[in-house]
Image 1: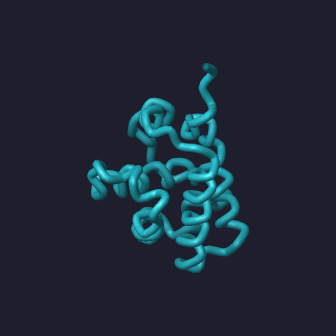
Image 2: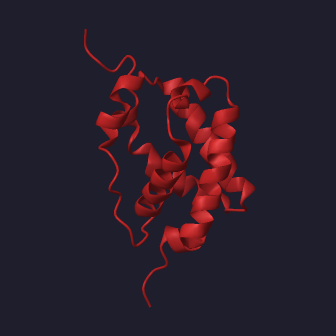
Length: 125
């Protein structure tokens, strides 16, 4: 029998979409993070994030959104903001009763994109 993927342990696409909704509810309630999303179509953003998380957790989908570095380059995201995003993701996963080991695995999978997303202070002068 094939090893069960993180995607399947999370409950598949519908469960991931529910986590993404909780995640963005938290992010948009965060005064520090909300400005990053002021001009963003949040329905589209939620769909992209659901597809992204499905892909990085081993789901049967390929992420076809924008290149991470290109999508975030203009935002001047710093490590503090990225860390806050990671905390909100972990909390949203916990809200949906995802076990601690699987929460950590999701956050670790997303962490691998930090270098593409954090741009403030990352550029040479």
